[in-house]
Image (cartoon, rainbow, N blue to C red; front, side, top):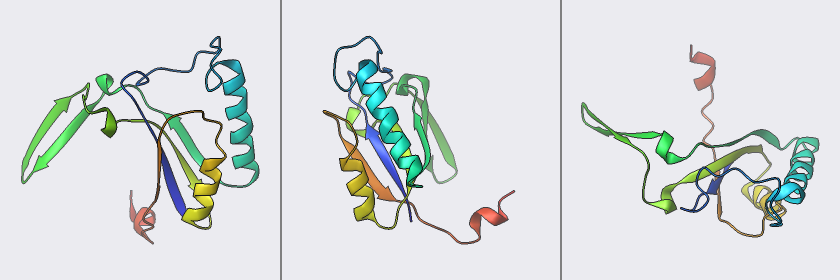
Length: 128
């Protein structure tokens, strides 16, 4: 099964890239090296399919659908609980396995959400 792990953002962290000079254990060179080792473990185990960090919501937009009407709302978005800072896409045997991998991530704080991705057989093969 594929799962997506969503790294939640906070108003303080949105759009902020880790500072290699920081002395914080989840930032700086030490934190970046720890994350690199964790990514290497995920790759070696065949778990990591994709990863990325997102630009801040101030550089994005939301499109609302209401029947045939479309409304575009430019960022930034004020509800930090709805913001995503980054993501991983993993291939795991079960949600429990994904949770176990996530618990091993080298973070001292933050909130992450893990959810199974719907598999729709034949859907991508028929897409242009």
